[in-house]
Image 1 (cartoon, one colour):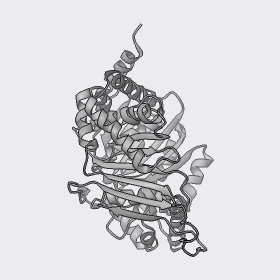
Image 2: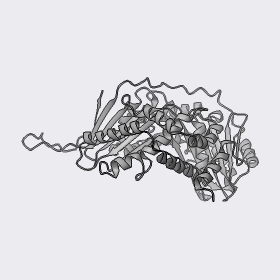
Image 3: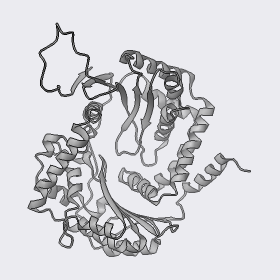
Image 4: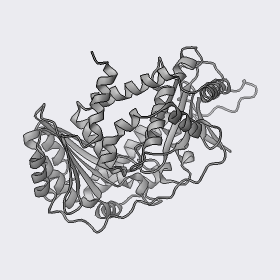
Length: 462
């Protein structure tokens, strides 16, 4: 009997070439299209990804990409506000949208015989969005309320914003995707119209269709619905300010009375997946999994969590970004442990890993787990559509997306350690602690009581 690892490896080897169920073409107006045929269920997913996101905003207009995402549901000459989503729901489907630093995307999941309907509506709002005087101010208040709920009322989210602004002190990844509150409040209808008119164009978009549809039918529908939409000029290169080399480590501390448990985050800049050059990103992916991918068997789990030195310890890395991204370590110490002591324990484990290297058994187990996850993901049309859409929206090619599993499978222990020395050595990173409000001073020294708790405080050192 073949081993499970051999079966998984064989399944992924076939993906190095263009999978038989994937078709890729570009319409004359520049709309790049990927079709993933999967007829196991009479369902189809349509996704439209725009190569524009929060990191493409001009200074002072943070949040406009996300704000326009909201306004894209406000109708056209053919569709009343909210009618697209209501129509999808009435036909048994679901829809949504999301914004990142590098892209904005819209999708519907619906019965395959309703694909012409959703393609017609999505193409209509690509070309004919209407933003009325009644809608733009009300929707701006919705976005402000969203920020209040998701960010302003959550000390962890506020802390993440502060950390991000220091990790990226020159690159626009340092701005929050949702936008800074004061800048959201100043966004206007004309700002939204200008963003839409400039960037929502077929030659700056990717159409992904996955599910029970043939490539021929998908192409016919794409040509019929999206083909007549003219490109709005030439797509401009996405050139952004980059981060200069970081020479010193930096620290941030933030306290808030709403925090129940101290936590530490340490982030350092790391390379992203680049077209034709994904090997270092693959090594970083494996490194993150080795260090913190399992709460039982990862390096940090064995050395810190299972020994009682941490309640949680993890590592994360996501190479799907247009520009350099982050490699992050995180730690939650046991109750009562001094932050300095907990951080020293983490540093000791990292130093030991850099000295001893990768355990061969750990490496093989992690690579097998990654391969298994990728194979299982092939069962989801939505997940496969997301992989191609996100990859193309962050500058990769279809071939890069296809090659990724084999590049991951080829990662060696030496590759992992080279990557580890890049991101785990001293210097250049940002370490942050989010802690509860310090205990009150003794009564004799205490300041006069305040009627309201102080807001969260952030301090930057270095």
